[in-house]
Length: 186
Image 1 (cartoon, rainbow, N blue to C red):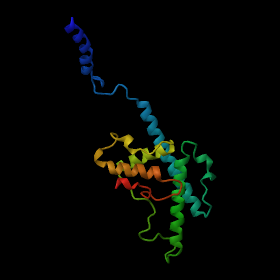
Image 2 (image 1 turned 180 degrees about the vertical axis):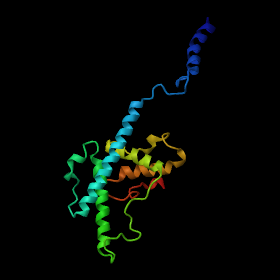
Image 3 (image 1 turned 120 degrees about the vertical axis):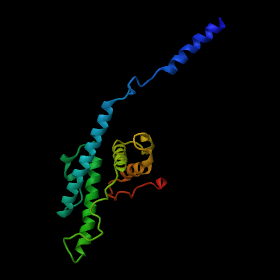
Image 4 (image 1 turned 90 degrees about the horizontal axis):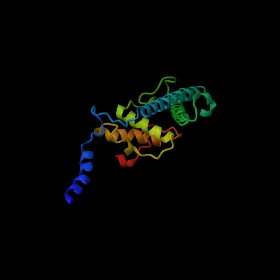
């Protein structure tokens, strides 16, 4: 009696240990491809809004107009406003500072050597971190790059976190990439 009772209690526990939760193909049956598609679409929408903001900021700076991203309300919506504003302010500030440098240069109209017109190209892991950071910031979430561990190659953790923090901490001030990186990453 005692033996049969212990076997009946242990048998379900042993059977649970043998179940492969990922199915015969190793695919997670609970994965939600719709959710990933929505994340990707949101990232693409923010990237496009950021680029539109950069174009408009550059145009306004070149035409000598005041810095006001709200001049173009049809170019963003409530979901992409922060990305658009960041792109606008960043490029506007870059253009104004480069025009100030050009005004004092004897070679007016030509960029000075060493003057950065564009931020340096980044590696894909940095860009992935930047996308996640921008998404979290525009979504109103708390900065947490560790929430994405497992979604990038762990050998490039520092690059991912640098991109994440650059996107999350770069506000409407238009600071250059890398300026808002937390010191705990270094």
